[in-house]
Amino acid sequence: MNKLVVYTCVTANYDIVKKPYKSPDADFICFSSDPLYEAPGWEMRLIKPFKNDSHLTSRLPKILPHEYLGDWEQSLWVDANIDVIGDVNRFLHKYSGTEGITVYLHPRGSQLRVRRIRRYH
Image (cartoon, rainbow, N blue to C red):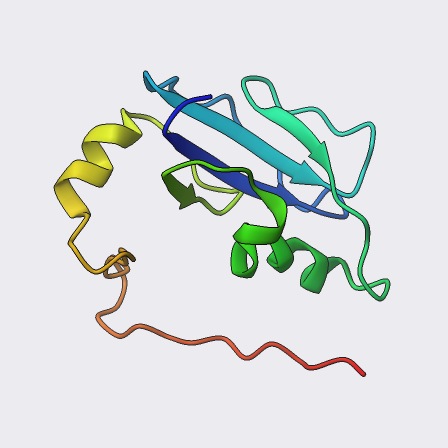
């Protein structure tokens, strides 16, 4: 097992995940609710649908990585529509701080927007 995992999720065939640039010492995992979904270059993992809501299901690995991933030292979430075109180790080295979490400014805006997740009972 490598020290770094890059992961994403596709539900309801919403996106087509492209083959990533294979960084040394990085594993690539794609979660999907469709057992037939394929993403070349990614290890596929099946995720159970949550409350028949594909949007919320796709967010689960993103907000609960400790429940879906193993014991990697670092993890990097990428939205399924993002192409991994370079070495993610170099990306993390450049942007990682010492706080335990790294975020970057979106190129189209300077504010971090927090999305609300509906609470299901």
